[in-house]
Length: 128
Image (tube, rainbow, N blue to C red):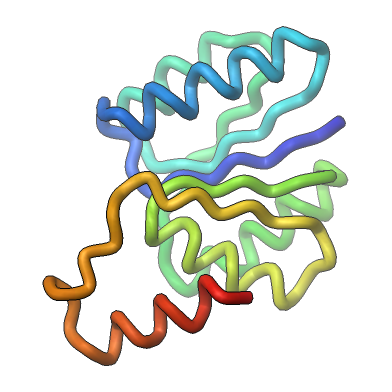
């Protein structure tokens, strides 16, 4: 099985540690894992694991086509995202492909710190 994991921040933190453990376990069971993330702790650690393919990815609107290509080129069976920005971009990408998507928002969505337009857009996207 080919799994694509996307995370929008690679700095050492709780979400990154959790994702590393998940990917390491899945890869250890014979599955192929592809990770799309910016450079940082998670990128460097996963690059050392034999069954994890690490691709540097910045999360912006042009990432839609890059993620779409990753899904098609690696014949991805499932996409899993962590953190808000990766979930948002992958949700938009899911409109272009039929691959199942799981969005984990490790960081709490703090609507009172977002402007009202962004809070509404995020809430609507995550309902799909």
